[in-house]
Amino acid sequence: MRGNSPKRRTAALGSAGVFVTAALIAGAVAAPTASADSRPGQDREARGAAIAAAKAARTGIDWKDCPTDWSLAAPIQCGWVSVPLDYTKPHGKQIKLAVDRAVSTGTKAERQGALVYNPGGPGGSGLRFPTRVTTKNALWVNTAKAYDFVGFDPRGVGHSAPISCQDPQEFVKAPKADPVPDSEADKLAQRKLARAYAEGCAQRTGKAMLAQMTTPNTVRDLDVIRAALGEKKLNYLGVSYGTYIGAVYGTMFPGHLRRMIVDSVVDPSREKIWYQANLDQDVAFEGRWKQWQDWVAANDATYHLGTTRAAVQDKWLELRATAKKHPIGGVVGPAELISFFQSAPYYDSVWASIASVFSKYEAGDTQALIDAAAPDLSDTAGNISAENGNAVYTAVECTDAKWPTSWQKWDRDNTRLNTDYPFMTWANAWMNLPCATWPVKQQTPVEVTSHKNLPPVLIVQSTDDAATPYPGAVDLHQRFKGSRLITEKNAGSHGVTGLVNPCINQRVDTYLLTGKVDAADVTCGPHATPTP
Image 1 (cartoon, helix red, strand yellow):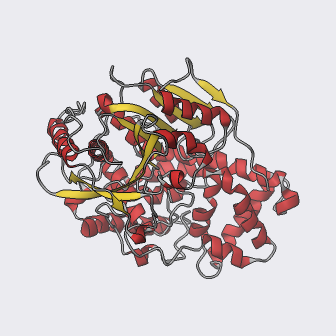
Image 2 (spheres, one colour):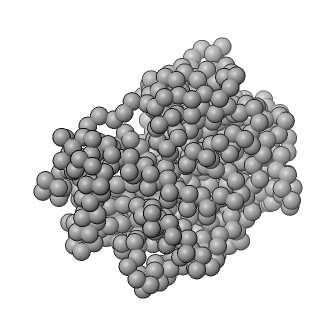
Image 3 (tube, helix red, strand yellow):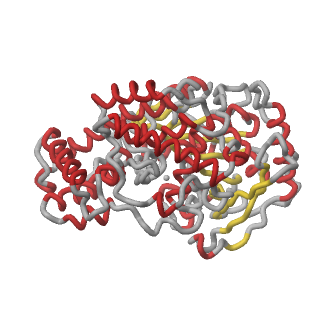
């Protein structure tokens, strides 16, 4: 389950990819206390995290101009934070995490510290976050006066000890097999690919690193970054999977948290992480896919794809069948189509552009579809590649929790779901199937819960979100006492705080600037409907 990228990456498994987006003086901050990680057997990690954070507080970050190939121009600055690979061995092997910042634009009196961001994934890079300051994004102007905007590449991502599970050139090859199986032979082929991918993760990354690719370790890394920034307490904005990082941080380090916004929430229940969460997502994607089709039908005068949802669906099925028989341009088959069209359930901001490409194809312009849906064959160089993001996604979800090992269970659950929710079900299943044969020990997820010193947390969620269904926000709201839930009703875009909706934008500003939340939960109307 991935929820950070406008375009899902093509999976390495022969099917469509899924979720397939100023230094303070060192030593000025007291060494942080041990974390509140109270799970059995976690005392050594808690002590290791405290040791690493205390060291980072003394060391700080040596901010410099960013490397030119990072495409982060001044005044954005970049640096590194060292963290233990294994928190049970805080003095053992270290890895370096890439961080960047844009300093606050306000006066010294207005500055409130650093605001650290994670965009989701797992596998997303947060290094673009400071550009919201340098490009003077209107939604963030007020917040930028009070906070340094800080982004980072989580462990394994991009510039932070990047991991790999497959040769990048192989990863982007197209067309891949249709994710919807026609036979038991098709299923067996996908199972073999999934097992080979899991083995590739162990071979290319190494089991020692793979075993440490977990959400709790990313949370510990986040606390070390907080200390390195010279901050006694963390201000945090997490979107999509970034909300799960936030939920676990609030559980493990409640006393280190000042303010936190979580936007488009992963259900933190141990029973949901991660197998059931992906099944729930299949259902939600189908509903949102139908909403896009309704919008396309309502705008038939522009797109000429049919005046009803059923007519648009028929066009879609016809396109899939054509691409399966003869991949369009030799590279766009059903897997690549899903990877492209799935953006519509994610973000209504792309509804028009996707409908336009579809419309052009129906009018005879196949090149528009090839340009839009074919994989980027150049996306294989450097650290930040589609393959790297996919590897991190797989590594974190597979290591975080125990997954079913019985193929019969996978087959039964996904066959049942596919009957009524066919848009994403099998693509999602193959994306996650490496977890069934994962080569390192799978962990038990943190029991997300509230502590008495947890500050009010602001939760923002749209009711029709496909990537992170609405019940997840309700669940976290119930777990975090004193939190406030802002619901965007009759809307479904993923990542609400980045959209123009004054009912939400004003409350986000108020919370970050003053710490104040409404006396009760708030329901807002939807943001503006897209126009053709």
